[in-house]
Image (tube, rainbow, N blue to C red; front, side, top):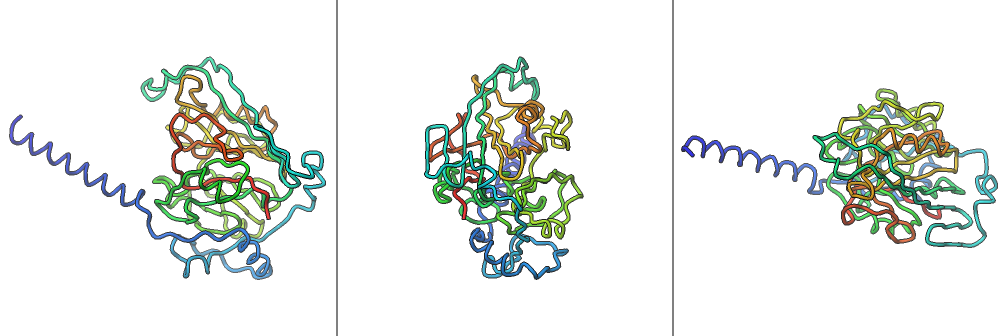
Length: 355
């Protein structure tokens, strides 16, 4: 190797080293964060200021707060007129009744079911790197009824909104005292760091434009899917947005039929481990966890997952972060079969006993 080539190699290695350092500094080292508002405080503050409608046209960004959470805005609490405890009275129990695959209480009903089938289709994308996983796929489905919307909560890793904060879902679940937990949308990863509107437990943490579809769960239990450019914060506030996720794609059309075209990037179109949320009607939801990247389950393509939700009868369904982040716990045990040891995540969805 000549001297010129040696110096070129050194330059390339130095540039690569700098890029790695920048990436770690930007996305892996925790940056200035905002302490999350507890759902108890969020509800209390929202109820106190229900008649005070501020102007939300300004952007709400990480770090805008003083003393952590003092100026974080809350959405209006708009409740469903129906009492879900009465509506789903046959789903709940007077006391906690738990098995390895089910849990009922006065407020929550969860039923796990495990499924596996042969898709008959190899994933030939990514230069054929996924073909070795074969054609089988397996998933666990959690069918969920809640007596109150606060039984479905979200949380940030380390209880902090910000870039670089991660935590094991199992640890977050213990802190939340949840019965069931899955990973969320990884709101702060390198693609989603400043992307979209993030609302958690009725608190607005970010309001930015996005080229992705946004999933919103409202205080009244309904779920809406917004296309890029459709999200108007004032409208979300007045309608009572309770949770929002920015990842996607959405999986069903307005009639509850499986889509065959998806608003997402090429990597997500491949088969992967998946996490997704489905909506039937206020108070009735499901969470889907697809295992992948292993001989027993290659994962799912978006259209395969969409067909599952259509067959379930969901009115809306939305893909969350997947891959090594896809993880589900149930009663403090791992409920799925991840292909890697538990990976730390940025956020999660938790089924609890509510407020």
